[in-house]
Length: 177
Image (cartoon, rainbow, N blue to C red; front, side, top):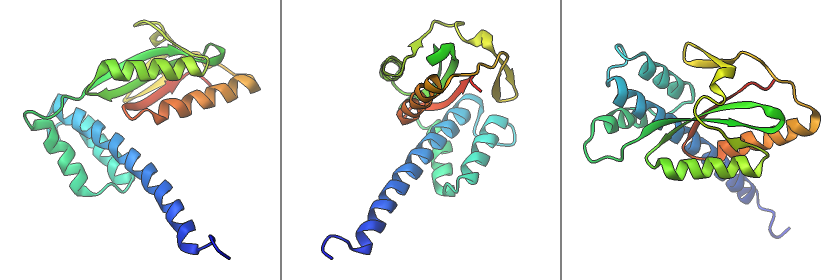
């Protein structure tokens, strides 16, 4: 019976769950900070901030964390988070729009390039993939959806997982079905 304690199993499950939740909260916090910095700290006058706060509440993010993210936007000397959008192509010619919140654009660009190169994708120049999408509200939708074969779909899923692992990446839009 050695090595099979119930607590050990719970500890491993809790650690994985906490890491996932921490990553989600970090992403939501960055979105809140950027929205408050760009358009002001009042959610009544800033629809983007109101939407980010609603998403945070939906993920059961503590109110203290939300308040800290809004406050961080007005602090001087705090790291300067900026929103960046990357356009790329993935397996099977899928178009990707990658939105990131970063304090170091060079690092983020290199991380995204590495993930794309490792999963049959490549970073494009400005306008390379934007033509395949139209903006509807705060969501981008594909104008020309692409259907992938079985092998390309597996590669595409692996690419999405790799992009999701990058802390600065906020959202990924694609024209894949």
